[in-house]
Image (cartoon, rainbow, N blue to C red; front, side):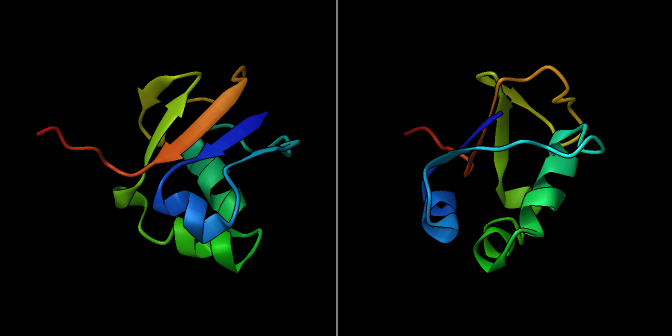
Length: 83
């Protein structure tokens, strides 16, 4: 699965994208956030405030309880505002 990081999430993780092979127990976006957070300090820092992170599965914005079972791509980004 491809994981994309935007804005300050990219800065904190140190990467813009990566391909990962997920363990079988990672079924939702929230599970993915927990798994990524355990991978190291940069990830832990990036996801320290889950309410400040938005996610999209295959380019559709979703909540943390959304399934990623058949997803090809998950993106994480900060909230956006219009102007």
